[in-house]
Length: 246
Image (spheres, helix red, strand yellow):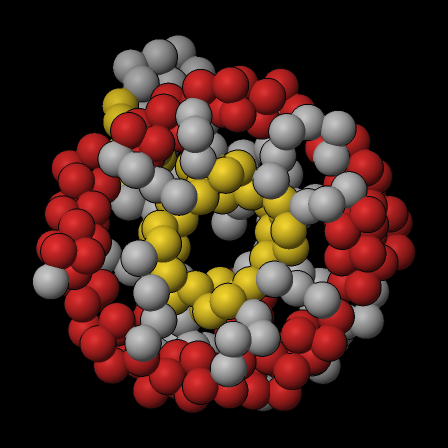
């Protein structure tokens, strides 16, 4: 079983690593869907953990159809972050018609020139035809894809996940992703054969300095921010350990 945890801080990474996470997808601003993390954060997370650090490359929130200037920014981010000890990158560019953009090839080739792995993130689940999209990203040279099978969550996309896993036939790694929780893992594993799981294990923590004379909250006047929750993480890895022991 291979596990990947979505993190946005050194604290998140250290906690996830302590439970044995194999990979960490590192990003900033996860409440916006995750944006590119800083080189300083990457360096510290590499120093403090044994997990492979995968840096998300995403220049803005919302969708995945990027302008030429935004793609130039993504290229420069890969150039800069490749100088760190990051293991790979997670990104995804779509065309307006919800097909996979050929521009991904520019980023894949650049990352591979630095011996970094490439993950196509869950933009994949917004494509118009996930089976055609899978063949395209294989041709482009991606190493793995995060997917819920085109559903809102992986547990609702089991049938499509099975199809993708069979279609991949070892040519690319299929990682079950999308609101994956402890209760979902065994069913997905047994029905699809997929043994890689991506999770955020999200929780919230209060910061009393957020709302005082001025409101600095970003979600409905909330004084909380999101992070990896240890209880959710513990439940997740308990199920993973149970499957490995079977």
